[in-house]
Structure formats: C-alpha cells, structure tokens
Length: 441
Image 1 (cartoon, rainbow, N blue to C red):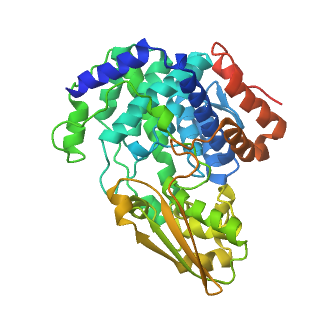
Image 2 (image 1 turned 135 degrees about the horizontal axis):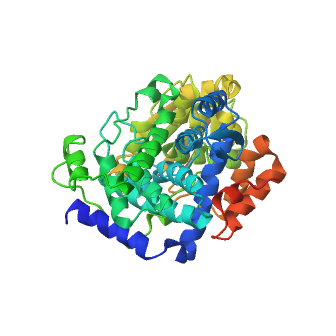
Image 3 (image 1 turned 45 degrees about the horizontal axis):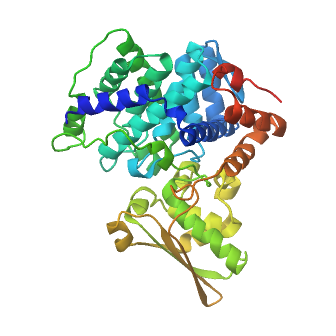
C-alpha cells in the first residue's frame, strides 16, 4: 500500500472513532500529559531552561502561559519551551517499538495549538493520541542512522498530526501537514550528548514548532507531495522501497512507557538491578570491588558514555546510572547535580563497571539486564527482564501522581501540585485547556 494511503487510513481512523471513547486510552493520555507536564515544571528550576524562557518572553511574547512559569509566550514559544523542559531531566516518556518518544514532540505541539485555539482539554487529549499514534508508527518504520539522535527526527511527523488535530484541521489536512514535515525532517546528531552539550534538548522543540507550522500551512491550502515519506526514507535514511507503516487498529499509546527513573530508558534495566541489589544485600558499597553489567546491544550503542562530566552525558551513561543507583538506591533528577556527579564513591563504582553485550537478548529483540557485584570477596547476582513502565508493568496512577509531586512540589508547592494533578486527571473533557492548567493551590 502507498504511504499516503496508509496515512489516510490512520488519520481517518483517528478522526472517525473518538479515541477517548476507549476509557483506557483516555486515562493513559491524561497520565502521559500529566507526567510530561511534571517534567516540564521541574526543569524550570534549572538555569538554562529558565534563561531561555525569559528570552522567549521578551523576544517572542504572546498571550499564553504555562504552569510553573507565568511568563507570557507565543504559540511557538510554548511548543519550544515545553518540549525542551520536558526532556531536560531525561525523565519523560517513550515507546520501545519506535525506539524513541512520540509524545515528546506531539504534546508540546498539541498544547501550543490547543491553548492558542481556546480548545477544551478533551481536544488536547485527542490531539495527543493522534500525534502519538502517527509518531509511534513513524518511529517504528523510519529507523534513524547511526550517529543520529531520535529527538527532532521522525517525531516532528507526529507533532504535525497533533498540531493539526488541536487546531481543528480536517483528516486530509492532517495528512498534508505530515507530508509537509516529511519534506524537511530535521537531521539530528548524537554529537551533543557525546560532547556533554545540551543542544540536544532543543531538538524536540524544533520538531514541535515545525509540526505547528506544517499544520497551519496545510490548513491554508499549501500542498504536499504524496511520496514525501517514501522519499525521506530512501534519500535520508538509505531505505529500500517504501517504509512499512503499521495499519490502524491497536493503540500504540497503551504500549508506551512512563519512566520511574530520570535517565535514558536503556539505563533503567541496570539501575533497577542495582536497586534490587541494595534491597537484598544492604547499602554499603565501599567494600565493592567489581561490577559487571550484561545488557542488550542497543543500550550500549546509545548509553556507552564512560566517566561522564556533564548531566546529559550522565543521563546517557549505563555505568553512571548503575553506579548512582547502587550507591543511593534511587535515580532521580538529583543524580545530575554537580554534587552528585562529583561524588567520590559514585565515581569509584562507575570506574569499576564492566559492560558486556548480551547476544541472546539482543538477537531476540528483547530488553533486560543482569548484574554481578563483588563485595568483600562474595559475588551477588541480580537480573531483570522488565522494569516499571514496560507494557505489562505500567506505572499506575498512584505512581504517576507521586512522581508528579516529587518533580513539581519544589517549584509550585505541594498543595498546588496536588490541585494541578487532580485537574489534569479529572477535569471534564469539555473544560477549557487553559482553565484546567491555571488551577492554583
């Protein structure tokens, strides 16, 4: 089937059958939005996101505001800043089969469009689902090349779909917006992560803004070539023929994960092993003399950074995440402060970590990890085949609420945090998006 026909089928499906009529989809969309909102609010305590927000409010002001940051923003600034903040601590969502994070692009684009258009929260949630379903399928079909970073690449296609839905575009206009983005999908490098530079955190913001502009272009009647995605697949990614895009029917949103830890998802499996080791063996790591992690190949490919010197390098480091979790029993945003990065015991453990690729796990296309820790001459082993957030072990509402409180209460206070969580999770679908988010303590 031609790619345009696939896109038409997907868009028609998402438009014709209200996804929120499926209770599990509505609940997951609300939880996904709440979790991403919490990550954004937490980032406002960091100097770079706060400075960028100030610059945007001066250079590109507008009528829109966001929780945890009351400065005035334009629609595009909302998309850019929300996306950048949401990924700052590397605690936001993802979809394993897409090898990336479709919500990270879709949500900021949908939010900017919904706020600008005065939409109810139900329309925002429908737009998020639309962007996630399109983006997730694009990520599955359009695997990036080595040396690229997934943020800012195919996610922009989902951002276009989300923005189009939130702006009130038709199904056909939604497809044209996606194809318009396909003509100019960003080529995003992994290089900033290796260099310890936070330029990577701007990628998804650029993708969200591109999606916004493409949606408006499509709604204005600007046309798009029907083979744009096929051409991108062939020319930019070196693919053969047309990409295989999964048809409608199953909601990828229900397979997406929410993170219990602040780190790239690949780091979670080793970190969970470390936390399990602490629970079983006790917390003293000073007698530890050897650490061996066996993990699937993709984890090593993207998170092989050793001796990280910056927060973003540490977020993409199997050895650092494991060492911090082994020492503290946790892996939250606090792991990337200057104090945590410089902790002598964490550094000692990180240097001990040996990493081996699990060939069998890799061949099966599965995730998991096995950890061996030698302490005082005795070897202790632990392993995990799944971690919280995996499809058959999703974070439940209480866990998402607890994470939201942990991330946002230092910024907006516990009472306001609780009120905001309740509003997002319980507000009527007809409630205004802006009114829902403006709830205060």
